[in-house]
Image (cartoon, rainbow, N blue to C red; front, side):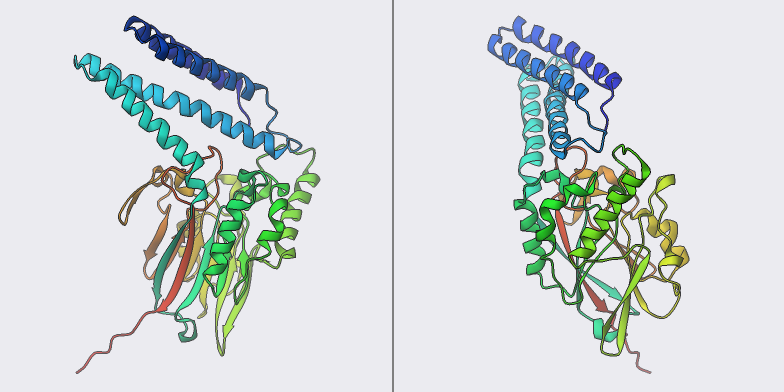
Length: 397
């Protein structure tokens, strides 16, 4: 993460212009204390802009606490800017329509936006939704009918800066589900391996009958900081892989595992991140598993749902792919079973279950945060996927 001075200067100029206008209107209408409060917020915004501009953020040597602090500072800046900007827009529309309610409505809108933004930053990240999903398959072996998979994704452990309470809550919730298999679909960290070290013991407590399987996400490849040399970068990535295998997880970097129940089996294939950026197409299905069209029931773990249409559907008969990555853009509106997120503008499959010719994709919206430290409506998710064997209907003559 690097804050560019040009962007900060542009934002600062816009904020100053807006604050001058607001203060003049408030003063003209006799709201002196409100004007002083707005001026105080304007000074705070300026301090945040200057502080973010001088912080060293891109180097691997930068402490994670500094990076997290800057994320909250940036979010605070926008949590001041956005409500005022929307309030001004409402006020301007009201003035144009010659409505007396313009000032009151502008204040109410600004207050609501401010409250929602901080609820999403303070409250929602500590909550957890366990989503129960049943998926039916024609090719599922009878011995695996009712097989329970718990999917966890996008932990971004650096978000919590060593504070373990939220992660411990997630680990305990996963273990309480008594799964046959646990699958972690990438982005254990945001920048580098040391973010995960305070949680090593907690992560090692995850348990399921057939084990814990994982793959790497785009943030697990150490691409979001500047390293002294390539060897240092590769060493840090190896350290993250060693951490996962050292606590008993089965890390599938273009590899597979066979899970058996009596004489029947399913295959779990893990591919490295295959994303929608040119440099992120690492995963190789053929290298991970040579029998991509054989008769085995197959589950693929892949961080980015982009790979499902770009690679998996056309190059295999994989029955189920589990992915993460989107976070639902950490912004989602839910009304009953209907969910809306700006993530759909970028990803065709961004959250939940998708079916294509009897083959399934499930996209978990994750538990952690990257970028703005908030999840507005996008409650951290743990998914329980129950595999069901589709019943064949008999026809009578």
